Structure formats: structure tokens, C-alpha cells
Amino acid sequence: MQDSLFAAAGVFLLLLLASNALRHIFRRHARAHGAEMAAAETAGWLMFCAMAFLGAAALGVLNLSKFLNLALSSTLLVFGLAALVGALLIGRR
Image (cartoon, rainbow, N blue to C red; front, side):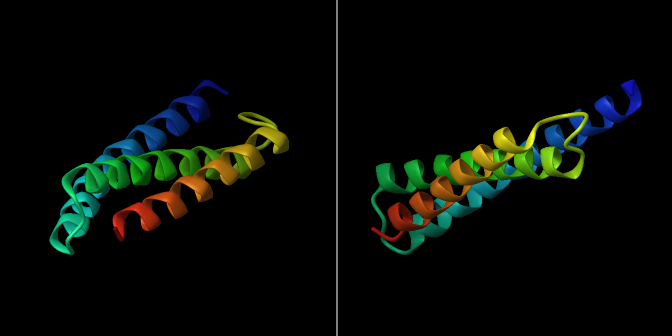
């Protein structure tokens, strides 16, 4: 039980680190395509939140009995998709 919990926490931490790198890349990409600095920064943070929500939902779905229930995982999935759509729309400005 403890080993799987530590493994899931480690995977989630690695996912957050990768999401932070993706945030910087997406911010630079939006800025290079003419987005304002504030819009690019907001889009980057929304991308980070989207990856964090989607990663938590994926970890929850992989083992519903240990980590999360289906209602919480589906809520994380909906918020993750909403943040992803928001990041893509704001990054296009």
C-alpha cells in the first residue's frame, strides 16, 4: 500500500515538473505568434493547470479503489479539459 502511494506521488511530482517546462514552452510559443505578454502568461498557467488536473485524473482512473473515486476523477477530467481549451483560446489572441 505505501509503496504504490509513494510511486504515485513520485509520478505526479514528475508530471508537475514536466508541466512546468511545458508551461514555459507554450508561453514562448504564444508570445512568438503575437499574443500579448499577459495573455501568453495566462495561457501558460492554464496549460500547467490543465496538465495537473488531467494527470491527477489519470492517476485516479488507473486505480480507483486506492486513490480517487469516479466522481472526483471525472470532475478533475472536466476541469482539465476546460483549462486546456482556455489555454488554447487565450494563447491565440
